[in-house]
Amino acid sequence: MEAHYMKYHISYLENMAGDVPTRILPARMDSWYTDYFVVTQINGFFNQFSLIQIADLRNKRVSTLLNLFGNKVYSRGEKGELPAGIIAPLEMHIQNTGEQSVIGGLNSEQVQIDTGSESYNMYYTRDFSVRRPNLGTPYRTINYPLSDFRIQLSYLKMHLTCTEYDSRIIESEMFTVPDEYRLVTRPVMEEIINSLFTKE
Image 1 (tube, rainbow, N blue to C red):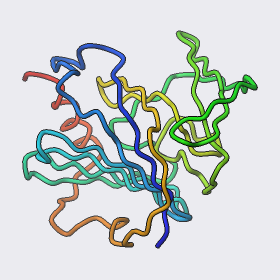
Image 2: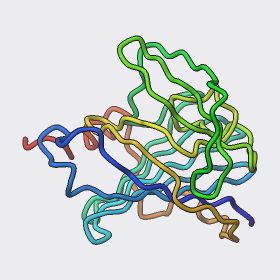
Image 3: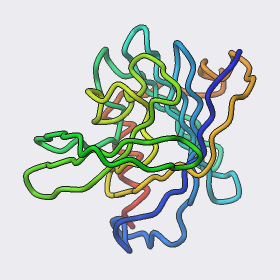
Image 4: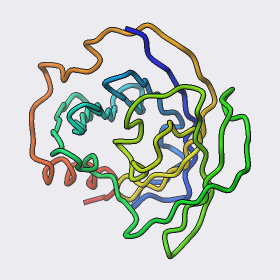
């Protein structure tokens, strides 16, 4: 199966995420976009940690998979629900600025995001298209893949910038939850994610 692959550099907007210094956190996210699924993955701590989101674009549902030192759990989102741990602004206004840039080899268009408490710029690309490319983000009303954007996971405020784009052949197993992952409820998954950033 063919996928549009994007590698993102992660920079952190704050020095600390809860009790954790962000300098020790992963600096890369990988995303694969297909006609029916979008998969994002962050690995860290010598592959002892991974966070994967599998967005089912047909059914508008996102599964979150977490592997923490071999403890593998996942939760299934309800239809239209944001992934576990993702924090959306209470309000958000999106406006095209007309500015353009090339980001990670992708022709990108700038939008300004205003949340009422802050405003910032992001970019999307029309160089390829999939339906509902931003199902796993608060920016679902943007119908094109994001090449530069911000997102918050629990205490973690991230700025992601595409550094590489490619077309790749992938296996369809990437879109299924492996058998070794144990199903948990969304509140349990969010509690586990929040605990990553606290000393308790």
